[in-house]
Length: 252
Image 1 (cartoon, rainbow, N blue to C red):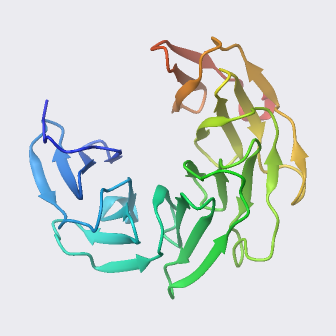
Image 2: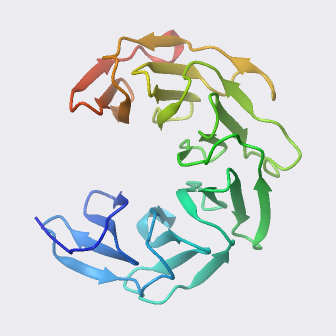
């Protein structure tokens, strides 16, 4: 156990041997025993989210005003992606091509890492505080509305396109893509519902219904995690945790 005395908003594992932890205005990288391996220099404000890139060789750190990328054991950032606003969520495509932030101003901001090109997708009715890329890096799921929105990042990316909309929850509280390339997504809601989706089906602007709904507890869903492609773990805010067996991809 390690105590830093600083506010910690996020943590992210890399290959099961290192974990990056937000600690106030820094990110700390720890080994499995809690020993510190390295830390970033202080950001302008509290670190709000973290994401590993390049198979754990680079760490992206979000704080007010920018996302900064650090190579391993490098205190100063090697790349900075500015955006004036409060970043609440961070997602990096497994390909490393895209960095996305969900923001307090009800938008998603996107950087193309190849050339620093930028795009902002605005118009969400609420702040965007949950983002998740699937394993292919072609699909991004987001909250910020009663519907989960799913954006297509294949080809040139989502500029000028519309997302798919997944309608089940009144308020989205958790998102988790099934491992692999099948396009299956799990989502949880404030009313305790858990839904499974063929999230990449249909065309842009399509409104999809769940492929399957799981029995909940009535309490808000706090977190979702796939322990393998056939087992989904669900945690509710009242402390209860349950695992569900999920059929094969074709039988969902």
